[in-house]
Image (cartoon, rainbow, N blue to C red):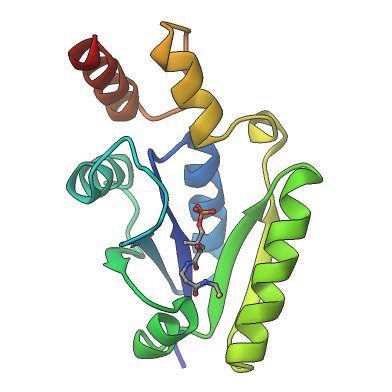
Length: 162
Ligand code: PNS
């Protein structure tokens, strides 16, 4: 049976930390489905199309990856895609509460789906989409924290916003 994992998130925008988890996930699973959440309550900087475009460009050379978007419950989506695992990256302590809560809720909703955590690479422990956006907004150097296409799009976006 093919081992399929869903790697869900907002990806607003994708960072090198995400890419690192995806690459490592690809060594554990036959296929990793990178799934961007639709209809989230969060106010996103980038539209769904922009987020998918940046992911597509950044994941270009990786063979066992599928790119998709999803709405509703993650566990329902995972079942529909024949996945039995959810892949999540865990950074410093602050992630733990939220991730633990979500993993337990998902397990309660569907016991067939396991959440698999990978520790974030040391280089990416202190970065996040939000903090990178904050730095980029005020002209900070975000080189090496995001794929080249994301750096370009962030600059474009903040230039356009003035
Ligand atoms: O990158 P994020 O924003 O931390 O990702 C959060 C995500 C997309 C994994 C989470 O919000 C999610 O799975 N949403 C779908 C609804 C759902 O199933 N929630 C968890 C159980 S209530």
